[in-house]
Image (cartoon, rainbow, N blue to C red):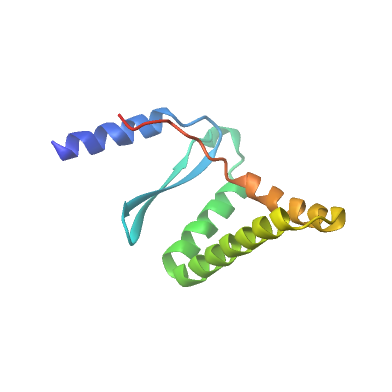
Length: 122
């Protein structure tokens, strides 16, 4: 039964993808690990054979780093999360317009990760 549920989840995931995009989907599998799935929804016929799309190069590089230099990726992620946390705390405590301008720029970079709330799990 679990295999059918997993297959259905994969099919639903694929159905939610948009055309002409590269996706790297990470999902937690347990407390200490995650699963990674990459999708390419681009039309191969629209790209000349001698060109490799920049998105494909970057996606391949990200997969390479995750598979072969995971500690570096982990450390960079932890550093970024710590930096943003400190910037948020600093921004909440400071009264200076100049300091707030600097922290606003730092926090604006977090807009690259869009949090979506689906409400209660059914």
